Each structure stands twice: as C-alpha cells, then as structure tokens.
Image (tube, rainbow, N blue to C red):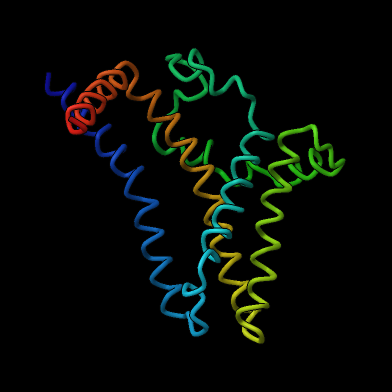
Length: 197
C-alpha cells in the first residue's frame, strides 16, 4: 500500500516537473531577453510570434523526419515494453536528446522542393515566416537589425525545442498514465460541459 502510494506520488512529481520545467525556462529566458532588449524588439507586433511559429513548425518536422510514425500508434504508446516505456531521466537522455534530431535529415527530405510532399510545404511555410522576420528586423530596427536577428534566433530555437519537448513529453505522459488518461479526460469533459451550461 505504502509502496504504491510512493510510486503514485513520485509519478505525480515527475508529471508536474514536465509541466513546470518549460514554464520556468521560458520565464527566465523571457526575463533575460527583456532585460537586454534595448531596441524594443517585443514592441513590434508579430515578430516574436512569427519567430516562435517558424521554429515550432521546424521542430515538428524534425520529429516527423527522424521518428517512425509507428512510435505514436496507440499500441506503441501504451505497450508496457514499448518505445515509451522509459524512466523519467531516460526520457531526457533518449527522446529529448538533441542529437536524435539532426537537421540534415530534414534538409535531405526537402532539398528536392517537391511541393507534393507535406513536409516540404511546411518547411517552406517555416522558411517564409523566417524570411518575414528577417525583413521585418531590417524594416523596424535598421542598424539594430543584427541584435533583432539574434533575439529572433533565440526565440526560433525555443520554438524548435518546445515542439519536440511537448510531443515527446505528452506521449510519455500518455504511456505513464495509461487508462487513467480516459478517467482524466472524462472529468475534464464533464467539468467543461457543466461550466458551459
């Protein structure tokens, strides 16, 4: 009984850490960027959003080209000895290891510019957003453009990291929670349904 409760509390702490870690990093990073922002980068509408969105799309594409889609099939996610049956530290060492997502794989996939390939189309969208940011930095910041490019690059990298992190952390959480996901979904559904009425 006590062992089961200990395991449950430990799992809850791990899941809470998964949520709090990116919030903490983003909060600290945002504070640092605001502290060194002498060009009022964040005052320009859309600059940060476009940078982040371009990075997030790129991060999702890195997942697609570097992972087998079978990893995300229901039987793989919930299999007790499947690819997601790893410990909390192994989640970071295996699934969230940056070396697992080499950009060369994405480049090899899109360099033919096959517009019939959804990956290529999304890569072009991400590149288009990045170009808008680069041009916008020149337009709004003039000689301060290099600093704006640097801030945009940091936010772009954050977008890449968050896309990979959210997908892998969510999939691992589904594996850990198993059938409790359905219970949680039911309570959330009931809560929001009753709140709407």
